[in-house]
Figure 1 (spheres, rainbow, N blue to C red):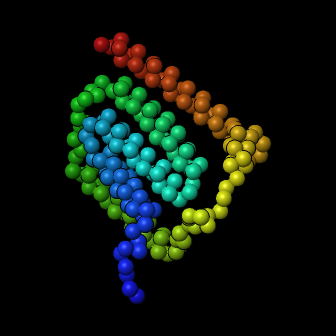
Figure 2: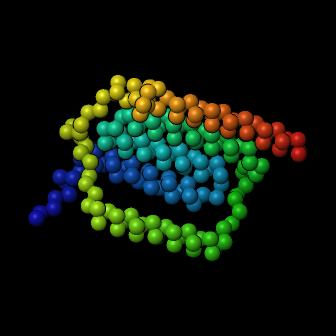
Figure 3: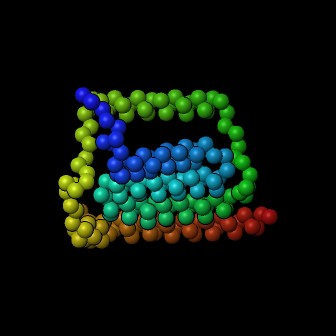
Length: 181
């Protein structure tokens, strides 16, 4: 079997490598950064790269949800929470070696479990590209915003109440911290 590297240099493969490098690099920097705001910024770029990977797989709806919900709302909430922290520009506390060892052990166990599942279950790659099945966006919209059985309007309403409670909690924390000063 003859391997020709040039055959694999397509635009889609190059974009996959670039987006994967962005996701892995920014994800690693988000975890390793000792400055809180910088870690949130790296998290934003990680989530943005994941949306790009969804677009490569022709999952436009998931890419839009990824950008609006995670890269938009969650990171903005995270940044607002960070602004409520007193020592914004300072480094976080150092982690002990025992906690680093436990985290490394948990990571290795997670990787081993993932590999065991992948090799035992024979994960089949999804069909992507022009042969991918088309999704009816009208059906997705009706399902997300419907109030019948197996529809999700109630979940959207519950999450809006939860976000409102988070905002009120942030205001209470911010006013209490100002009173303490």
